[in-house]
Picture 1 (cartoon, rainbow, N blue to C red):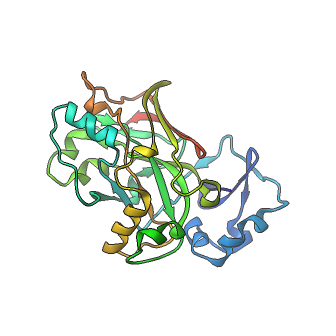
Picture 2: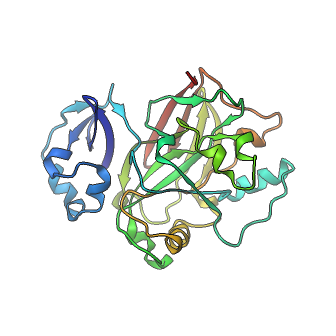
Length: 286
């Protein structure tokens, strides 16, 4: 099943994708947000809730929100693909592999939905793409052992961890370059975990104006999804609606020679096998 959040009549709501449209589910289930639904017993009976219902809204023209618009935590993995690690070294940035998963946090206000603009900030011209697989937590937990981690996954989505590069390198902590408003495309929807086998290698492609700039698969991850969940849950309790962006593969603009970055007027897409396509235009900051 595909679940998504969207804006209707000026308010945030959510529903399920059926065919080329959406079945609204907030009023039907009594859960105001998708995150609330993921953490409820109703999530296990989602198929029965939607069975026989016809779409009420077309996907075309829908104002998509980030899949989880106000996630409590957006946990992002750093350099979690071996091919990306190798391109960083080739670009002259000598980095040792970490023994533990390096992570940072995004704030929810940095996110945008499918079709919504990525904002090119006034203070930088190094706006870079990072296509990533996103994991959405459905079952809460602290100190989750890796062998039980899959039980806590509600589903998967697509993330573009857009980076403002020189701000990222202002200090050893990179979060300043990862939290500009309008730089975290997330969507278009979440595919529930029952549709993607645990650990399945998924092809990931990022395109800029139709040109492929990243072409890899999730088998290149250094730290697996269970490892990331176990590590993050050692630090804090994971709750329904938390998001783990699992890192980006090779092909980012910063590592290219010459370097290449996004600019206003561009269109960036991230496509992941079994999930869909996340597309966003790039606009100048107002």
